[in-house]
Image (cartoon, rainbow, N blue to C red; front, side, top):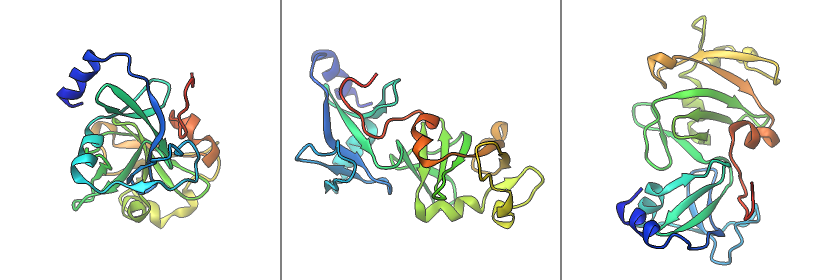
Amino acid sequence: MDKRVLEAMARWPSVPDVYGWLSLTETGKWRLHPKGDATQADTPGESITNTQIIGFINRNYTHRDNGQWYFQNGPQKVYVRLDAAPYIFHTNETGALTTHTQQAVQHIQAWWLDDAGKLYAQTEHGPGLIAGRDTLAVLEQLHTADGQRLTDCPERIPQDTSTTLLLSSALQSVAENTVPLRYCPAPRLEAQLGFVRLPALGYA
């Protein structure tokens, strides 16, 4: 978090939080909602394109223990509507994962697949969705414990919550080289991965 943000928080500790002004898209783009309507899941908002503003949001993006994510704008918390998950992961030129906030992913604790075929990862930064255009590139790097490429044996991919498939890849550290892939219906992902898509005042 930026030093001047920390200083502002110490100087003005009682600034009210705000909701409904910022959202994160399924592709990892920040969008501003001047009407304060980000509390509604289907409002598009306006694209934020200024690189300095994007960098400022990225550096000061964090979360509360209750799973609500926010951008610390000086002394004020600006809560974020998540159209998919707290992070959107992309592959870089080497095939490694990075967050939409430009942080390298080093540790993957689990993979999750929902009923729409979207792939999620639990990482040291938090949970996130593999961006749609990067999903195949990630899947091609995943191997079963007996060495098969996952894309060569789709019949082994878990189709219900009772099945777990252990996978290895170069996407995580050697110490965590084998991690589980599990199935989770989309409506249960928030609870399973521990985040809140639509943060609201008074959420416990």
